[in-house]
Length: 66
Image (tube, rainbow, N blue to C red; front, side):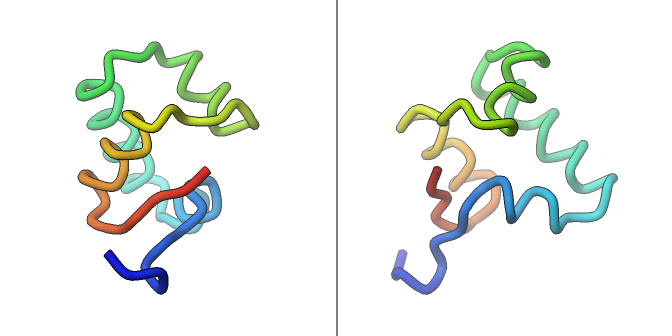
C-alpha cells in the first residue's frame, strides 16, 4: 500500500455512516476477539496493536495507522 492510502482509524471510522460503522465494528470484534468495551476504549485513545491494525487494514482495504 502506498502512503496516500494511510488513514488514521478514528477519523476514518467517524466519517462512515452509522450502519457501516456498526458493520465494521462487528466484523473487527469477530476477527480480533476483543471485547465491546475494549473496542470503545481503543476508539477513545488506547492504541491498536500491530495485529489489530493489520486486521483493520484487511477489513477496510486501506492502510490503517494509530
